[in-house]
Image (cartoon, rainbow, N blue to C red; front, side, top):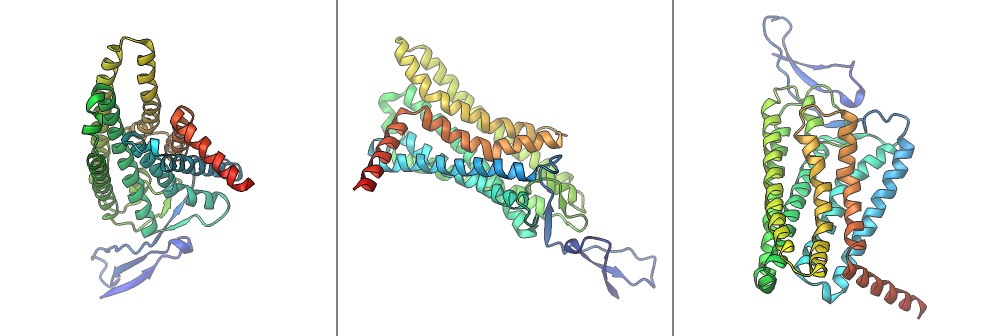
Length: 339
């Protein structure tokens, strides 16, 4: 016979239920069954009392990121001269830079503004899934963009033949499938564990290093799978980028004119800066065994919120074609308003 027990010394929102064996048989062991249906996000470590300031700062960055990437999309869609593979990938990068911070930032801004920090169990799993789906797919897109630059610089006469529309779409589909597989593996290994005790996530969103310590069962396998999966994917993509840019660097050095070298380098420098901003946080967070909590949070914020905003600045301010297209868009809007 089993008795239905509730432990009232836990916070009301974190009650969990346990089926206890009949106390008349003390030799029998107690068997736990998880019924957790929510977690509590405790926010950015070591920032108590700064919620209002952080909310204002991150709100500005998030809105600036949305506006900047939307403007890049408008510039690419509205200009027929930008309907090329390079700008097709740049437009997709802007979409990722809108969606990726939107997985974690709105919830963070809500509890920084004084709203409830509670996130449902399914919401936590969804947040982790889409965070890794979009993050890994964007990493794959960086590799695709590196290959695009390699073909453009090393094989300029065959560029349009190699980078046909069907090939571009296929590369993007592969990037999406890799992201789905990566996120599915990480999410399934993380949430197949039992969560029956503390439900306070000592972080500002549901990520693997923050959720796994709350598991009631052994999480060693999930930790190993997470580290190997993230490390293997990040290393593979980084190697592919390095190979492409090594070949690009050799090709640039062979260009005789200084103007030609400068033009070729200019088309790649923005992409290289964006890659450094993307891969640096991944290496620090997932491949370091015991990162400092505050340092880890700051690096994640750089990865989640700041890097997408920087991408919009990098690709708009350093790209003459995008700036020309934006000027035409603003001119047409002003003419329409004045009429």
